[in-house]
Structures are given as C-alpha cells and as structure tokens.
Amino acid sequence: MDYITVIITSLVSMIVLFLLTKLIGNKQLSELTMFDYIVSITIGSIAAEMATELETPERPLIAMCVYAFISLGISILVSKRIKLRRLLFGHSVVLMHGGRLYRKNFKKSRLDLNEFLMQARLCGYFDLSSIDTAIMEASGKISFMPYAAKRPATPEDLNLVPNAEAVFFNVIMDGQILEKNLSYAGRDLNWLNNELKVQGIKSPSEVFLAILDNSGTLNVFKNYDYEEKNDFYE
Image (tube, rainbow, N blue to C red; front, side, top):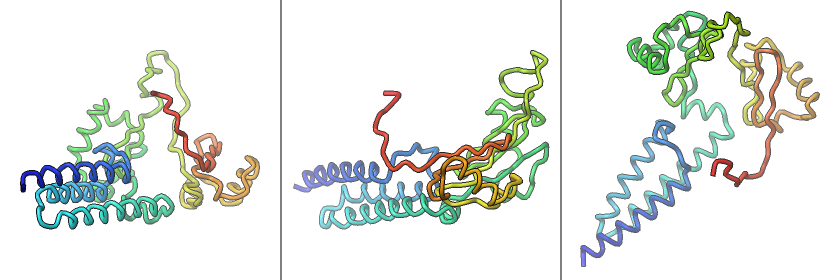
C-alpha cells in the first residue's frame, strides 16, 4: 500500500511542479536570477519530499504553492518598480569603457581579471584594445561592444572608416523616466517631453521603453495591452 501511495504522490508532485513552473514563467537556467534560482531549488526539494511523505503529503504541496505564488507576486512587483527590480535582481555594471578598466566595478562584481579575460576570449576578443565597452549584466554574463573599426564585418580590410558607435541610453522604462540616463545623454526633461509630444505621446506612462541613440533619435515603444499569440518561428 505504501508503494502505491509513493507512486501516486510522485505523480502528483510532478504534475504540480510542472504547473507551478509554467505559472512562474519559462526561463533558461542561464537566464535565472539568484532569486529565481533559490526558489526553483527550494520548490524542487519540496516536490521530492512530497513524493516520499506518506502521512501528510498536503503540507509539502501547500509549501510548494506558497513559494510559487510568492515568486509570482515578486515578479509582478518588479515588472512595475525599477528600484525594487534593481534591489532584488541587481543591475548592469560597466567594467570597461574607452580603454579603461574600472577596478572598483570589478571588485563590486566579484570578478577577477583572469575570468574577465577568459570571457573576452570566448567572445572572440583576444586583444582588449579591440573592445570599447564591457558590461557585466545582472544575469552574470558579460556583454562586449567592439570599437567601430573592429567589428566582425572587417571594414578595415576594405579601408572603410565606419561611424563610431556609442552606448544607447534607456531614458524611459515601464513608464518611469530615468533622469540620470537622460542627463548622461546630455538631454533634460523639457527635451524629452517635447520629443514625446512630437511622436503623439501625452505622458511617459504611455511608454513601455524609450531609447536615445547616439544620433539623438528617440526610439519609443508604446504600451500595448494585448497578447501576441502568434508564433512567427513556429
């Protein structure tokens, strides 16, 4: 009888684990934040305990649901609160820019030079002089932006000098104006409001994402409250 109970609770725990995972959201392991990783391990451990809990299997089941709904609630909150998102999930850190390595940012990211150089080589950059900007993303990955003349398209072989690239600035996210980024880009609130009006936008709350490129063009992505169900790569 105990064997049948174990089989039944194992099947139930697998089904519940699958449903809760779908509820929380689909992410690859490399895309998980530290918080998501901890919650996933905990829910998995509880699911394993539920499979062998013969007397009170409902307790692990309730615990799994509690963890899943807490994770879901936090995901909803951080999607609307930038400061909370940065507090819980972290933010990107500039490691290198314009030929300078920022030592304090390396320490802040708990990254040593050997690891940085290895990541650069894995991305095809054996010579650091080819890199203009390197950024440690919140996920732990490092993004590299080469100098314009060092791009993979080999413009040097054609004796071409492409326009220099620059870091793009996110100036509005989730309807909130990022004033520091706007200031770094050499713009102010009056300029931003005028640009939004030109594009027929009355308030920043209508904007999901706005990016200022190096040519001074404001690219705006408005809020669209509908779900795209078509899979274009199906």
